[in-house]
Amino acid sequence: MGCSVSEAVRHTRVLIVGAGFAGLGMALRLARSGERDFVILEQADTVGGTWRQNTYPGAECDIPSVLYSYSFAPKPDWTSSHAPQPEVLDYLTELTDRHGLGDHLELGTAVAGARWDETACRWQVFDKSGREFVAQHLVVASGALNVPRIPRIPGAETFAGASMHTAAWRDDVDLTGKRVALIGTGASAIQLAPHLAERAGELHVFQRTPAWILPRRRLRGVVAASRRSTMARRMFRAATYWGAETLALGLSRRPGLLARTQARALRHLRDQVPDAALRDALTPGYRIGCKRILRSDDFYPTLMRPNTSLVTDAITEIRPDCVVTAGGTRRPVDVIVYATGFRVAGALNGMHLVGREGVSLLERWQRGGVRTHLGVTVSGMPNAFFLSGPNTGLGHNSVIVMIEAQIGHVLDAMRLVDTHGAGALDVRAETQDAFGAELRERLAHGVWSTGGCTSWYLDAHGSNHALWPGSSWDYRRRTRVVDPADYELLRETTESVA
Image (cartoon, rainbow, N blue to C red; front, side, top):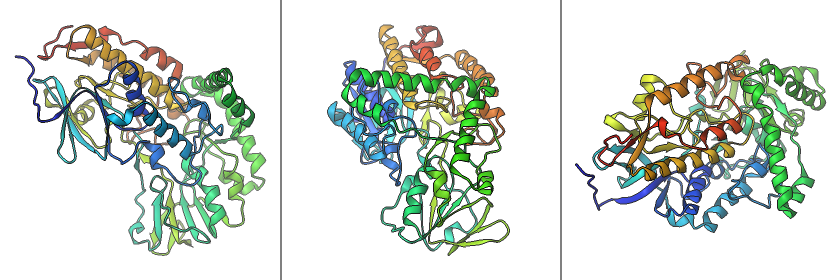
């Protein structure tokens, strides 16, 4: 029986879900390879992903901006070694405009789900308005950290003042002279706190667990040289990349190698916080790298301002006019800012994906745990590819490096299908199982499991589905070429050809 298709829906060869870094990078590489038959679905009204969403004061790259652009579309004119949010968003907007990606965009289109049609041998994708798209290849690039996580605190709904999450910043709230509660001391909080302290009358920073913080180096001379010289820019990028890679072995296999990095963080804390009691409150009780390593030169000084206080007692309740901590202490506040991160949504982000034999991705993962091959493909989900999928995050280097490797892997997989005259490919279950077993063994030795902390890297069962347990160089090597032996090739009648 051959493939049957309907003309009542929009057909495309490649459907990309998401127009952030991953989705736009995928689209650009497709265009450069000569593929013009692709569509990008984006639920927002503009491109940018997390860099469109996070507009809080002080938002910027927390890794050097020279690594925060694609090697195949470099940005030569960063104004800072750590670019601010508007500049990163401008890069993505310019990328879209310069390469004509806007012609392929469907903005304001939220995907509800997709189903693999074993008769038509295509993905049927439905948006939340009921429109249908049909594609041979489905690339899910919706990101893993984009759903704000607000803790369930008794009484929070009764608060009479303004409240907001850092990923849903409200410019309509005037913070001048206000009493502000900042809940959280993670990556967003340490960028935001100095700006809040400058405007607020009082700033109360509520810390559950202190973070390891390294100094941030502002390499103005190198940035200026990079703007003038392509060679200087390439050398700076290479040096920055390989310098960051040196942390990988300590994080993943030999945590003892992190001792010098931890000593640097302690020295930074001592240099910036002379008050012994405050310093003790800010000293983590776990090994560096167990949680995300942060960089800042102005967070510690902010905590010593006369209008700022660090609160380490647990929050027990929120009332209409105050935050209450253990022991019954009331702190009157006018505004609450949640800097509490995101729900780890994996690659699904609320989409219902149904693969072969009518089994959904969620069902597959509920039965056997979150399993992928290289974080990109999932057995039983033919021609579906995940960018920034499970276990492809990094704790030491730029995630753009990983996404770029995944994009190349997806393109090679598509070429494999075409070369063999197949309609689809599906990773073999035994290949996926072997990769999963390797991951679990490697993760068990990592600092995220042995360093003495709990973090968003770990799920409720203590499993790490967030991070790649090794160097990004190793991941790039392993994803460079798709091994045909790892995949079952399917004809358009869904019969196996290999």
